[in-house]
Image 1 (cartoon, rainbow, N blue to C red):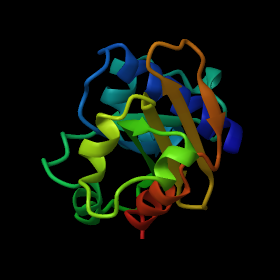
Image 2: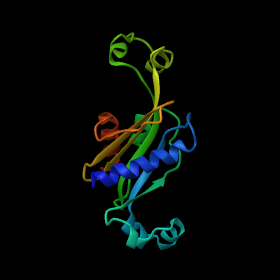
Image 3: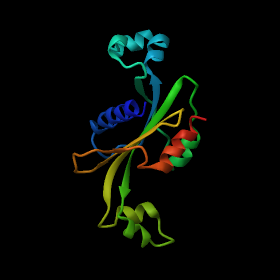
Image 4: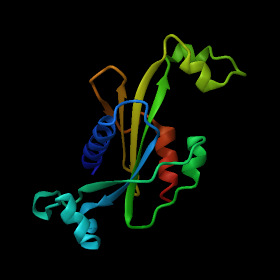
Length: 167
């Protein structure tokens, strides 16, 4: 299942990338495609889903309404999913700094302002997905770089926050 989740997350990241950079965080529900075709046959037909050409555990991402403005952790704390949702994914842009730079951050600074103005910062698009069974996937794309980094544990705190929305 982790391979299918990773593939689904790569599709989601490419979808978001199609809108360019400087996008707000975007949240997606992940539905089991087979269940979706039974519950929503018209939607499945509209999406061109063919049960004979899909893996049994295939996932379909469903983009959600924009998250409210404000801290992401507070927005995610307000999210809850019905049992039909197999998992969820979030794509957000982040500022990354080398570890030695993070260690030198002033204690009383606004972290985002300080990091955003640092000459060694790198902007990235982070995508994280989790399933109810605990499976996780993550991608990172640095701005200006065509390569996509993938792995299950690239953003463990965000994955934990997303998993909490499924409880």
